[in-house]
Structure formats: structure tokens, C-alpha cells
Length: 547
Image (cartoon, rainbow, N blue to C red; front, side, top):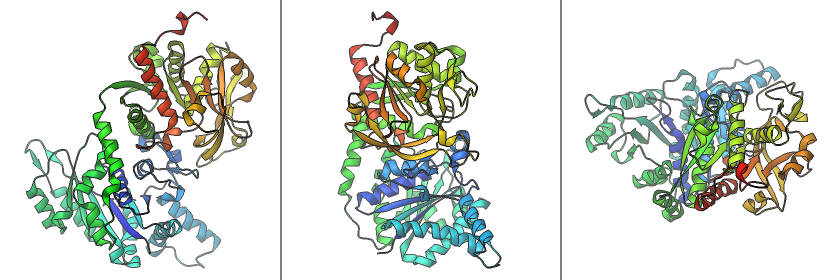
């Protein structure tokens, strides 16, 4: 059977939840027994988000095959529990680069290259080729941006054409809009949605369903009005009210009959929604959690939490496993530099230091690692978080007071973190880091081996710098256990303090592999340690312990 296609577009404003909606649609269809995959179409001209600021784009999600992609792919993987690849995120930059490369090679034999048909054909081929190579039942496609954006027009034209290419019966269009509530009038306004749908219809796309975001209840007369003016069946005008738990969205959409509408329109068997039980059980367990633990996330982009989306979700998933509701305290690392660690970290039960690039705020992260070490507070360092843990240890335990990373201090006399050999001559910034899945061999006596319960694991990476092996012996003698190494023993993947209940740094990004129903073992181990220490009241200063 040829693949069916669901296209999700957005109108009125951006950032209204297309990614969560697409992920939820995928979850609905997977619960019904279908093989699915997802593509995100991004109209910006960057080849990928790898060189974009987290303040502009949020987290860069890394796929198994080393693709640097939009953060929405993280939502897709977490909700649907599938593994995507670098072809699952298509940007205008990729499309135009591919076309120009072909033109320079003479592939078009002197013809004039135009938006239609060449650009639109390139977009369509990306979509259909991936669907065919994966042999899926349904491909769900999110079109980034909003209807009316000039850069998005080729993508909208492409999906309009694709409907004719594969047959109208094989395509389902969903349009996501906002119903703003004017406080003065205390009235939901439908006109922005009407205009958005009108713009979409002028392109030649008629939505099969409307999903309407709202802060509050949507009255029936508003549903009737949208159905009439947007030419969408009343049953397919679905209100989506703000929720306190995004993992509830698949059940909400299923409750409004979206799954039935999709399968009926696409001529698919209805499937069974009984597979929804494990998902709904997880949500019920989340709702039932009462005991709260406070976890500090110390980063340099905390003003924009989307920069740490996967870390935040991985903490939530692990909290569910250990039976604790997690409350994240967003701590800016530069605030620690100004005020000291005590002022910002004395009221938390665990500390997570995530990844990042550049010198700004790093000294604050080092202070966070020192505070965790000297107060025996569970600490989990991710990528840069491992590197600052090592720098702090070398400065304050080994007394290498100028220890630093070559990234931040190229001429440091103690480069305990240095550039990877294969990165030394790299000049292009985009897509050139150590990216994607790599194996890690675990020390059988380490804490990490106990968490993973495996001798060999694979994790996703995104870095240029690594621990300098010249300092490994001194660190081991002082109490650092290198719990995980690359199979050839040359790259440190996991470092642990043998003197602490939980002080673990990893060179990779375990957060990318966490799922609501299958949390990552390192995050589970971290929160289990937090829970255990709270139970024992064991937060004390190492300076007070006789050794």
C-alpha cells in the first residue's frame, strides 16, 4: 500500500503548538497500529539549525545519524517513540543548495531553473522518497511558519501539488490556528482564523480539519461559525484548550474524533485504540504525583527554556519513574558568577548542567559543579556539563588553578579539555562536529554500569572538544572514575566522582533518547539519588566529613 499523507499547516501566529499537535497525531495513529514517520519542513534558508542561536531557534535536536534538526523532531520522537533521521527535517536552504548544486553540474541541460516546477519538485521528492524508503503507512508532515509567510509559499504549493500527484483520497490537510480572546469584550474572535483559512484556500488548499487553540472553553456557536465560514465539517472543528501537561494532547484530540476522521477520509482501517492504555496510564501517573523535588538547571540560555527542551522533558520522564513530581529551577550561570552559588542553589536537591557553546557563563557552571561536589548534591553534567565538572575538579582537587578548556582559553597552561584531533583543521562550522550515535564501553564496577545494566551502550553526540588524556591518570588517582570510554579507549564518554553518591558527567546527550514511558537510565539514576538523599536527610558538606 502506498503511503498516506497528513499535512499540518499553521495560521495567525507562530509558536502555537504545531510540533506538539503533529507529535500527538503521530501518537494517535501509532496507537491504532499504523507504521508512521514525520517530516518537518522549515522555510528558512539555513541548511540546518546547527549554527543558529538557541535564543532564536531553541534546542538543536540531534538524530541517530548525526542530523542537526529542529527541536520539534524531539517532540515527534518522544511522543511517537520512533527514531527519525536527518532527512526528517527539510529546510529551504537544503532545497536551494541541492538545486544549485545540480544546476552547476549541468543536470538541467541549460534549462531555466524556476520555483515551479523545480523548487516544488525538490520538496515533493524529499517527502515521497522518505515515505517510500521507510515503507510507512502514513507520513505526517509539519509545514513550519504560518500561512502568508512569503518564504513558505513554495512549500504550500508543493503540498498542494502533492495532493494531485498521489490522489486526493491519500491526503488529509489540518490547519492549526489561534482563537484570541479580547479581554475588553470577553469574546473569542474567529476572524483571524477565517482570514488564515481564506489565505490557505486562495493557494488551493482546503483544510479537512481545523484545530483551534484557545486559553478557555470554545462555545458551540463559535464552532458552528468556524464550520460555516471555513467550509469544514463541524465534527472536524476541534478546540484545543491550553493544558498543564502536553502529553495529554493525543488523548484530547482522539476524544474529539480526530483519529476516526483521519482514518475514514484516508480510507484506512480504523484500527484499535486499545493501545492507548499505556499512554493514558502514564499520564494518570503523572497527575497522581504529589511529592515534589526541586532540580536546578544551570545554563546560559535559561531565559529561553526551549533551548533545553529535551533536558526538561527527560527530567520529567525520570521523575515519573521514581515517583516524584519535578520542579525545575531555571538558574542563569552568569547569576552564579555575580552572586555566588549558595544564593541560587541552596534550596535545590539536585543540579543539572546542560550543554552549550562559548565562554560566556562558563565560570558560573564551574561554580555549580563545585557547589555540588562540596555539598554532596547529586550532579548530572551533559556535554559541556561534564567538561566544567572536570575543569572544576582539576582546579580545586588537583590544584591546577589555571585548568581550562581550549575552547574558552586557547593558551591555558593546563588544557584539561582540548579540541578533538579530527576537529583541529575544521574551518566550516555547520555540520562538522562529532555528531550522532557512537558506542560507549562501560566499566563493570562503575555506577553508570549499574544504571544502564549493560556493558556497551550507544548515545548521541554533538561536540568538538574532549577530555585531554594527558590528565587522565592524575584524575583517576584523585577520585575520578572514567566509567565510560569509546571502544578503543581513546575518548572519555562518562566521568564519575567515586567520592560522591551521584556526580556524573557525560560527553554525550542522553536527553535525546528519553521517552515518557521509557526514561533514560542516567536521569533515573540521578533522580533516584536525589530521592534517596532527601529520604536520608544526607545533604552535608564534605568539609565536615572526616576522611
